[in-house]
Length: 253
Length: 144
Image (cartoon, rainbow over all chains, first blue to last red; front, side, top):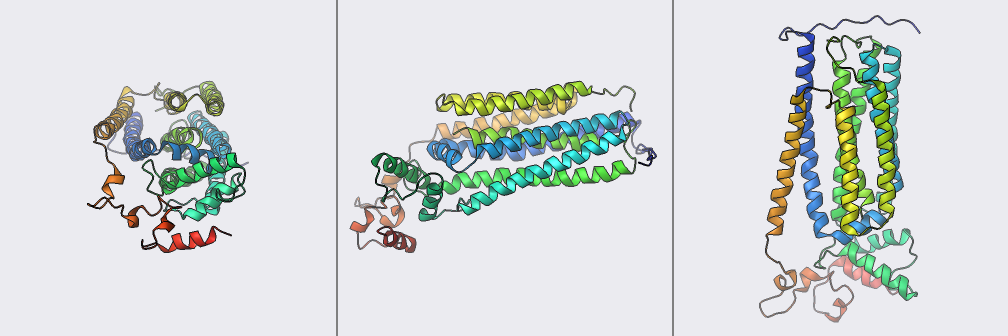
């Protein structure tokens, strides 16, 4: 591999020193991250309100519609990608260009893996007609049936199974007052929150690719690694949000 | 910039990774045990908060960073808490709403147009009630 020459970074003229420039960047980044927390915070408040109103729906939907194994897999993928990201930052801080490029590439790959798993999950939801819009009664029946039941509750002969299936049908289609079709409420929150999160992952992949190109040019070394550190912070906040999304959607029923 | 800038040792990152992976396993395992509705959620949230704190302190370096950044971050959490608090103060102090009552006409008749899917199986007894298309389709399919 040919040696890449380190490109010196010139501190912008309005800063006294490189250190001041770095600190200003970092504080600015944190202020941006606060806006991200506010964006998802609003969604989490909405989630809590609607979950409070439909506790049984939430329990059944997370049990029957979401696959916690895929969610757990994605959690592991994202946590490991957060580690490869910090190792990238560390490599830049110690001027280890080769390791920096390797870790950046690994992070992009893990982010891609996350999106692929997400893609499989979304496809399964669409196949089961679990849409964020009001689902047709008969179609959400199909969805329940595919997850372990063979017949409509009307046609089920085993009385125990029939009662259970009837209960599930009722909860998926009626709210606590018993008069609204509401599986779409859960799916709405699921698609909105994981969708916006997934969009952040895609943006992160773009930023990481940009860092990789710049790293190849030798722009990052122990004298200058601000962009690596900033994208790292962004990447961790995306991981942080997933740490909360995962138990709230996949585990807690 | 390298002078005076704290470089967090790689060992700390690796330990944080192990802790996060471990906590993920714990949270998944805890969810398989039914501890009762509120306890499961509280436990999962406590683990998530611990994981989040690890990410913030070590991966994001707040522990070694200038306090200003921690203050900014803490402010966002305080405001988020206010958001939750005010929303639930509102919800907790609302009066009861009975849609059964709300949907009845002044003479006490239930307006079937609005509650059609509630009495899904009994609405056939009301031949005059207006029935939406998909209901008809559905009731025809059921006998098959």
